[in-house]
Length: 449
Image (cartoon, rainbow, N blue to C red; front, side, top):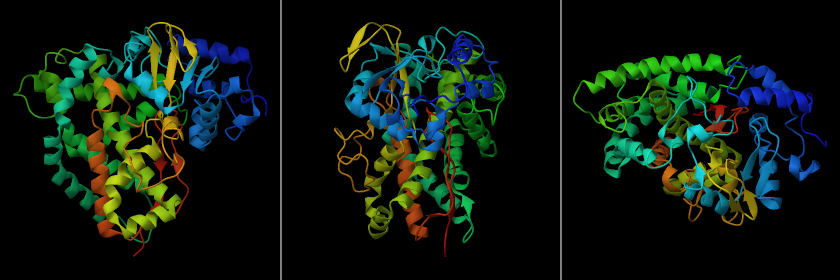
């Protein structure tokens, strides 16, 4: 087909996009998705190159984003999209270009007021829907606030957490049903990450699923299956704010402890945040702690089932787990993209980027760059240089909890291999309709005796 949109006119799309870009949170999710409806099975090689746009959530839900990214990598690695449901932006799809953008924060800003770190961010937003957070700041504020929570992720503290994570992983796996199908995401991936988050925040374990619910809310703000409008989703996020505001204020009055909320409450850089900034930083820590690890745990099970030769290799040599874990993270690429805003006119990949242009780094594409990663389209659990991937980002915004994520994956797989001959995928996985988080909502599996 020569046109990817199937049911709306240019005028309809432009009108809705203008409302959305103005910050109107009452724009109906159904209306927006209907206006930008596509056939997710269309062939990106069948349309003009300037029409190729990998950002539509339906492509990720359908698993058909790969060909779009492949074509852009091969034919136009720094590619301008004049029209998308997120507004105009540049796609950056090659490893080295992604690393350059991520490593030059002075040229490519993360600031909320300039559009933030995800496609669809609204510049200059300063209302109740604004969620400033340190990942959406530039130095010096970014550096000052990141330093507040960085001690949680030092090698010594991670070593101290290891026995607790192993104990919990074992208990979760021992409680799983045998010889009947269940959702691995809910019973294992979500459960382990939820328990870890509750520990890091030092909140009651019985509240752990609230954290997951709030994390899912962020990912589902634009999904009509969950919320009629983004405004409805924010009402649930304001419940999160009320919950953590109470803990934040209480910990200001008690001696400092080694948990994330106490750290925020006692450091001069973060002890006087307004409600939006508190909610933003809490959601950053929740989503960062949940989505990367959770989707890599699920993605690893799926990848091994889709590549039985690699699963056989693992069963013969569980000692490969430390190499397999970063390969799983590369393969899944749980954060599909990060966006930036150009702070001045600059050049990238031979293209002229203008000041205030939005730039999207497709981490998920950089992890398939054959010029940088040998056999990038193969899942190989014994890959050399397995940590050479884009999944955690580069520069000052590199994922602060990346070693904790790897540690949890190492432990869960060590404990899996002690207990089960195989975790068998026995149903179709259900993905997440998002071009930001590359996620898996359901993964039906069966553990055989």
